[in-house]
Length: 215
Ligand code: ADP
Ligand code: MG
Image 1: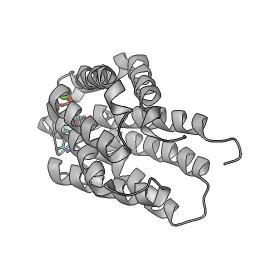
Image 2: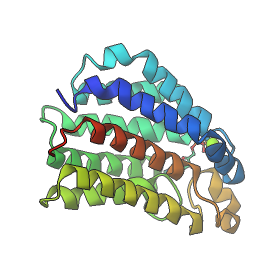
Image 3: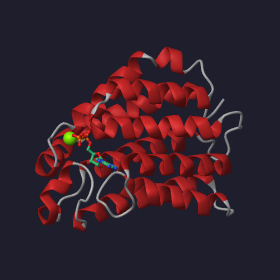
């Protein structure tokens, strides 16, 4: 029964908790080089997902991801809303009719991140949430093709997400509102990268707790 959409209420609750615990920090980051609404944008999405939980748990992963994308599209707003909606809808499209496996997830997650790059017209190094998602996707590709165990993969994913988030501090923003500040955007972590890292870490925490001890 592990790693089915029955896990979604726990995943959504863990994300909600970590965002609440880091609310001031995230808002301050987005106030410094953005407009300060990033946290509440995401929290609006999490609230909408919580309200639809009972419908989501009845679906398989591709259909659940599709519905999550649609819910986020209408609830989140801001640049991050359409980017997260794209991430989940592309993940759904890529995963259609496939069983969940590390290899399949890695392939599909890479396609989803490519779709976000396309949507945001952004690449790595532009001081956005993609500076977390791109290295995580690349690592998943490498890890899936190796004999690394799932718990090891998951722990490394967290480390890579943290490194990616930290790396945005020294970047010049060339996409989104922070790009208006040009050089002055240097020295501050991107809010979207911070929340990406927080959400990935929360998801990993829930999955690790679900895995049988032997894995
Ligand atoms: P808005 O910028 O419209 O107020 P949010 O505050 O919710 O939206 O989200 C801002 C975050 O979205 C940024 O911190 C950045 O990580 C991400 N972002 C903004 N524009 C882009 C883009 N073109 N490509 C990728 N990520 C982006
Ligand atoms: Mg904002």
